[in-house]
Image 1 (cartoon, rainbow, N blue to C red):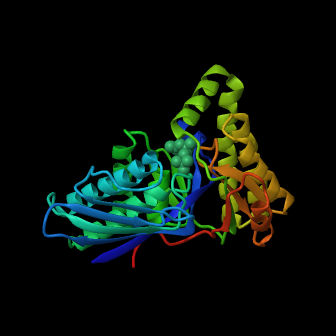
Image 2: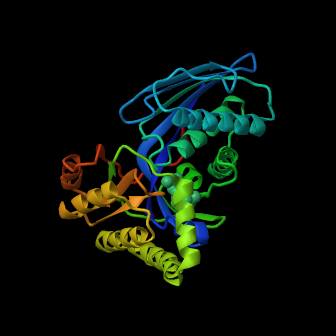
Amino acid sequence: MVTASAPGKVYLFGEHAVVYGEPAVPCAIARRATVTVEARDDDRLRVNAEDLTLDGFTVEYSGETGTDPDVNVPDSLVEAATGYIDAAVEQARDAADAPEVGFDITIESDIPLGAGLGSSAAVAAAGIRAGARELGVDLTDAEVAERAYRAELAVQDGNASRADTFCSAAGGAVRVEGDDCRSLDAPQLPFVIGFDGGAGDTGALVAGVRSLKEGYGFAADTVAAIGDLVRRGEDALAAGDLGELGRLMDFNHGLLSALGVSSRSLDAMVWAARDAGAHGAKLTGAGGGGCIVALDPTEDTATALRYTPGCEEAFRAELDTEGVRLE
Ligand code: PMV
């Protein structure tokens, strides 16, 4: 039996623009998915997944891949969760050249599901690391990142950037530009996350930005401006300048808003964070709903968010320098 865990992530800067070749800086957060696997002596999968959101619910399904789980959450979330698990199992089997092996799998996660915090990438990375190890193969972080990326590609019909999976495997702050992924030196980043309980439709939001960009030169300029901002942000990160990072986060949120991917609840949480004295705040991920991230070393932002209409959960989640690891 082997257990591995991997962190979720926020975008410090650069979502959406990364789709058009601009750099982005995702950061791993101290909220992890933990996957325990044990090889079976048949080719079946049994998956027990509990607490896949902050509220906690149980997803249990047993038997072969594709068996309907019995759960009280939307099918789309369950399909997503089990899809990533199945894809991770395929990668572990492939790494060990053991295509027929079955597993008992237990998943625990304190990363809200489908909220833009990289829960699926974390489950995939931890599952691949644990599954391969259970079959006698030790994968490096880079190999886990590559295989987790392939797992996401398989589940998301070829639409996945390397950002989530590389960040979850490597930990810390990372820079992603196309296929080029690298780790960045970063100070401790006091992230506070506000979650509106919902999620945007990533495909529709990406398509919306694309059509604005194609229709208006100034929208294309906005995407390019996000790239410029990310490059400035890298300097601020290297200098450990939280004030400048916050200003750039505020600016990044404004540009994302101009591209039409914010929402009333995201804007309300961003303003609540700023009013509470955060260095800066922005939406994180695809937008349309889901999460904001703020920088605040005090408790003030988390407290303010808890009283903000539309905010369902607020929590601290510092930068996590550790990526995927065996437990
Ligand atoms: O919401 P998330 O964490 O899946 O992030 C989406 C980020 C986008 O840049 C909007 C899309 C992408 O694939 O990079």
